Amino acid sequence: MERYVIRGGHPLVGEVTIGGAKNAALGIIAAAIMTTDPVRIENIPDVTDTEVLLKAEKGIGVKVDHEDRHTVIIDSSKLNSTFIDDEYMKKIRASYYFVGALLGRDKRAEVPLPGGCNIGVRGIDQHIKGFRALGAKVNIAHGCISAEAKELHGAHIFFDKVSVGATINVMMAASLAAGRTVIENAAKEPHVVDIANFLNSMGANIRGAGTDVIRIRGVERLHGTDYAIIPDQIEAGTYMAAVAACQGDMVIKNVIPKHLECITAKLSEIGCQITEFDDAVQVTRYEPLSSTQVRTLPYPGFPTDMQPQITVALGLAQGISIVTESIFDNRFKYVDELIRLGASIKVENNMALITGVSKYTGAGIVAPDLRAGAALVLAGLAAEGETVIDDISYVERGYEDFDAKLRDLGADIVKVSSEWEYEKTKLRLVE
Ligand code: UD1
Image (cartoon, rainbow, N blue to C red):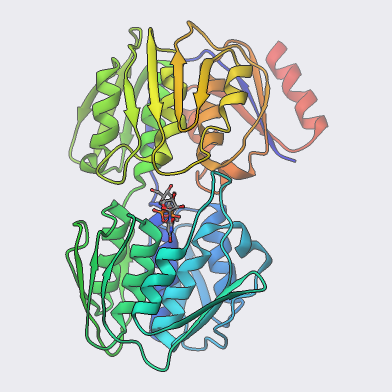
């Protein structure tokens, strides 16, 4: 099992370049099979989640050619099944995007029910409601969701809750439905907009993505395209929070500063200096942090995927902070691990009451999910002494070259895959 061995206490100084948005890539990789023409996609992050999705496509006859590490050409002219049967698919939430994509393309789909991060119940009732409104019969049996329609027709859909996945999924299927679809109470996240832009570049007619109301005029067919994915808001935010937790001076390149405003605002409030450039932000922090209150909300609110990272920084802020999680019902599981590093945090229901401590101290901990895993790495980097983090495969689902990028910023972090390699790091630490 791979683990990170970290020797904390080094400020992070230098430059880091952010990759393509993982969550946009997942939707775009799935939507790419909605045409029989080749689709070229640039800026795909090389992480486990995207790898798994591309592998699943190969399993149904799709040709996937890697032009380079971050560029693929997807050719689904020889797609031979609408049944995705892949062991790994159950592990990732975004497997459900194949329902929208295949339902749009072939009017039928069967996909294993989504897994993903262990952060609470993650319903799919809104996806089902949307597909049914478009005229599909949807069934859940034997761990799979299946959807089928003679023909899809446009519909007026009002989501009962804001859901990123349901918005994207229904947008995909509705692009190839007959007539007009209106999605109300739509999610507005940057990757919803990116996937809409991608579909439009394939000939779809989607208007209003990025607002509460998305209007889609169904088209008969989609065609090939050449598209570059937007930078990853959460990867960028994680490095910003890393400066807050560890101190330092970092230039974070290849970002869209507008997408980071909710994070920038909170980090400035607690004592980080942030300068925005056209496609970069600079974060500096050497003075003590001050406490604040954070509530996670759908975009443009503070992202739930940044909740563990800001909590790690606030654990080191003077005074009492409150973090309220309003999107997922079980997203504080990592707090026990953080307490092992010396944090003083009390969780009640969906609220964490954080009393800032002057330092964390290293210990052996376990990554419970993707974003919490990344947050615990930040805590380890800030902590005095050695921290060993197990189960880092979670982190690698969403962060490309996390350890290497951090090393370039001056962090002392290595990835080891055996006891022997771990023993070797001890020698390195003694040197
Ligand atoms: C996406 C992101 C994830 C992020 C989340 C919220 C991807 C691949 N993942 O996940 O990283 O944390 O948005 O920003 O893009 N819900 C229902 N019924 C539904 C759909 C959702 O009850 O049919 C609930 C969920 O359980 C959750 C909340 O709505 O409590 C938000 O979920 P949603 O926005 O759908 O998140 P995901 O698309 O799964």
